[in-house]
Length: 300
Ligand SMILES: Nc1ncnc2c1ncn2[C@@H]1O[C@H](COP(=O)(O)OP(=O)(O)OP(=O)(O)O)[C@@H](O)[C@H]1O
Ligand SMILES: [Mg+2]
Image 1 (cartoon, rainbow, N blue to C red):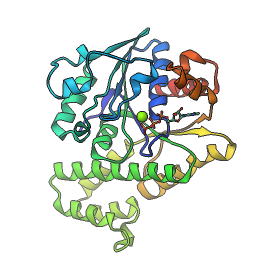
Image 2: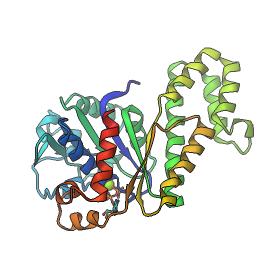
Image 3: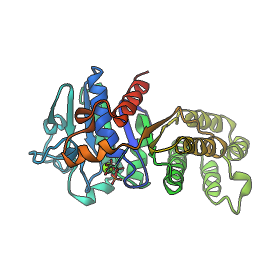
């Protein structure tokens, strides 16, 4: 399961934490840095990325590609009138949100092969396999949360689901049913407390097959999401990300590569009301500045 180099997935399992606002404005920031960027609305059935750009009508949406009405994905890219930046509208067909794995991987191949430097994926809330799979195959994942506890816990749960799904794929591929059974038991840590941490799981997995267990551990070390705490108002808010970082490290053995924050900013609401991106409406606002910092980090 290779990672696709130019894909950046914007994840935030809790609804309304800022995925779409961040996707759109990050895409602008990156395009201004000279990258050729396309932002893709993958919140299928509840798409609204186009609205951030003030785009009302367009001939095609992802529905047309997923349902084979359009052969070339490149044909459905909508111009944003901003240099180096196009978007792909999400569709309105809710059933598509549960795309079959094969169809999803076909879409991924086409997205990655569009010829853009960066493809920003604005994903739906929740922890469905649909969203998790995009997080797994993207080269970089931004995990967005707000400082509130439910959002932080959802972010942690998301990474946990992603870890288990990635490992399940790997152990199936390696044909290791005994380790797969162990992984199942690790989900039920109340009855198997020694498997509560990934450290405990790998200790036991090594006894079954040390080579496979060590390779799996290496795969986990490649899961390094950028953790973004959005809508921070105080210094304490900014620190909440460290709590999740600690949980991820201690229980899942996952390091987040960066911890970043975006300030609460009235400019976001104002720009939405005018159906214009914050980045073009208020380039010097705290929100735009913070997005620029994230864009710089992503390009390092
Ligand atoms: N930093 C911020 N400051 C102020 N308001 C913000 C900020 N970030 C997001 N918002 C507001 O939060 C609301 C939800 O944002 P957005 O639609 O981007 O979230 P989402 O995660 O994409 O939601 P969904 O889960 O429904 O897709 C918007 O009304 C937006 O104005
Ligand atoms: Mg959204």
